[in-house]
Amino acid sequence: MRNLFAADNLTRLATDLKKGNNRAAEKLYEELFSKVFGFCMNKCSNRSVAEDLTQDIFLKLVDRIQTFDPQKGNFLVWFWQLARNTVTDYYRKQKEVHFSDLEEAKIEKSAGQLSVESLDSKIEIKRIKDFLNTISSDERELFELHFVADLKYKDISKILSKPEGNLRVAVSRLKEKIQRNLS
Image (cartoon, rainbow, N blue to C red; front, side, top):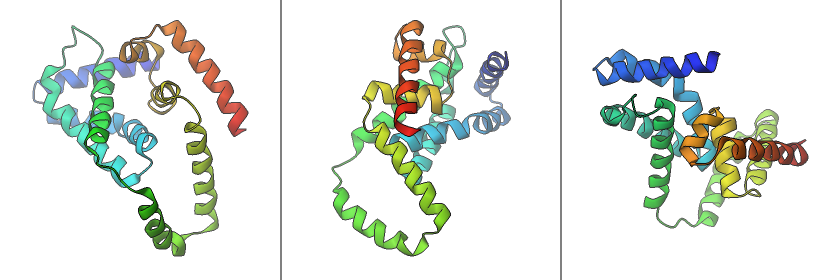
């Protein structure tokens, strides 16, 4: 029941923002920031880029809120499509990067900053990233929308244009993969 209330509350805030209520923009930011940032981190694995993408998503939210029509659909679906498109556009604009050049500089810079806790955390993050690299792009996107963004199957169904039942089965299989590979 809480998710329904939260979705209704977010739609109300989006409607208020359309009417020019800047406080509604702040509340939307507070409600959605951690999920959007997590989504962006999962997509790019770079904190600085994730912060920039998160900021871009919220700027686009404010800039494009007039295109949201509560009569045509759910705010969360509209918002996550905006977020996905922003990340996709970012990668389309990127030029080729030679990671071998970046890795060496990054390792040298961070070598003096390692502690046991940060090393353990980095190892765990690497395990998760390595696992995510073994699954298909469809599974990765489902992981991000279901586990990171915490969207309901109904909303994911609209975003991905796939039946809810298929998504439930796919998430169940994905959970099994996660348990097998990360437990």
